[in-house]
Amino acid sequence: MKQVLNNTIVAVALSVGFATAPLVQAEGDAAAGKTKSAACAACHAETGNSLSPAFPKIAGLGEKYLFKQLQDIQSGARQVPEMAGQLDAMNEQDLADIAAYFAGNPMQISGAKEKDWPLEELGSAEFLALGEQVFRAGNMETGVPACTGCHSPSGQGNAPAAYPKLGGQFADYLVKQLKAFRSNARTNDGDSRIMRDVAANMSDKEIEAVANYISGLHIGAGE
Image: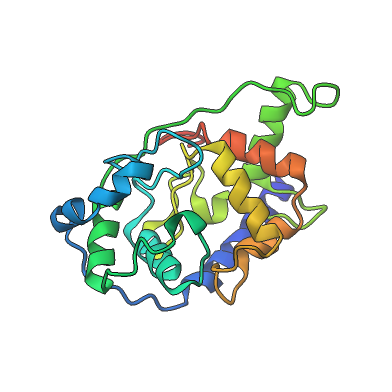
């Protein structure tokens, strides 16, 4: 119980610091965003529920978070080769409208999988248990805080603070992003370095386990 409490305190402290950064955003029009997002459907599907783990699900991620990511991709602060040139002709209102549209759609759950990692070390039950432990309690020995402090016990995130919904996202995509933060290939978590500092102390095993666990989270999970 003490370990969980300590990790939660660390995570909340980090999240408060990150939330203080101002995020100015135009008011988005979801109806207009639906029309403007037509080209997005090729990769992310019409509602933002991508059918392939090669492209993230962007439905329900939170309007502030989506707007920031679109801005960062457009400016080059976040490098996403698949998005190169896609946003060049859009203005701030266009980005806000698209963010509002996708944020208003519910994300479909991917579902955690029963698998071993690796077979001789962790069976399916242990792999899922490790994922839950990292998500809910972190790892005090290596300085990894619980994910729940920012992303909520059910993985629904914190939309006002621009912390994205994670529950239901593709595990492969989550693994890719955590490793990108760990290697500093992705740096748009701000001056707080909140995600880079979290991922820096995570092993491959922990990253894959927590990503698999998160992919099966839904509203009500863990509450």
